[in-house]
Length: 311
Image (tube, rainbow, N blue to C red; front, side, top):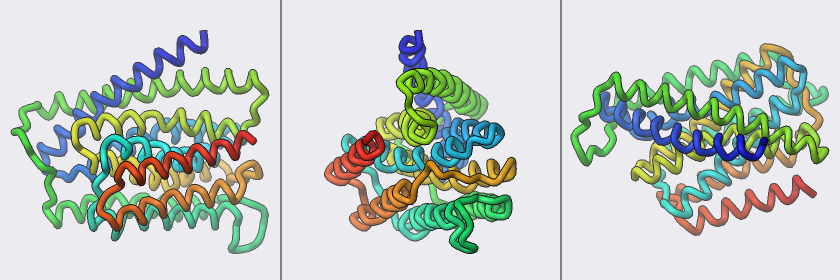
């Protein structure tokens, strides 16, 4: 029965992503907002909702391995897995603004998370405290404000190949409906995937870094592929980079207010892989795009990391 639910959930994720992206693109064209900002703000926040729910519930239940591992694992999967696979089929354009602000910020908050997690400031055992969480939440608000402020100041618009005729109310319904289908389908997928994994005796830390992380990142995968199919690779990039920033700043910021997050199951290697993945995006960005070769290398790194986890 679990396998049937997994298949149905995957179908729901695909259809939900298509509605979400279609609605987001319509809104972008209507209000002349750039692909990247729509991907980061609307699609990125929306597709990060499953991670928020899983990490928040993990914190409520006192399971910090799930709360932190879900974010770290999702960020690794987002970059190495999703961007890697997407770039294999659709080279992803990276502009100067991405190189100057969003990607360096993604690297910065990833490093900051590692500093907080291991409490380098006072040498105590790994802990993300409430004050750390407040700092992360402030960074989230700052990122959102700056993204829209810069977009408005530069008057950046997405490339309009055809006149947008979709009514705004219908576009909003598509976004909200797509998100609802995505999150619901994702919830069923994760629950049943965890049941299968636990039946094989897999630990919480490994489940959070792999199954839960990849499962809650399925909306990002579906949305990015759907965006790429519509030739909106900047939206796909914004979805991934935005999701990674939100995962750290918003999700762990909120979760740490429930209770300080301490986690022995997530090692420094996991954090280093997350940081290295973000740095790879910056390195490939100097060429102006992540091509098929770069995508293949990133996905290979993802496979190697998962082999390391299993062994």
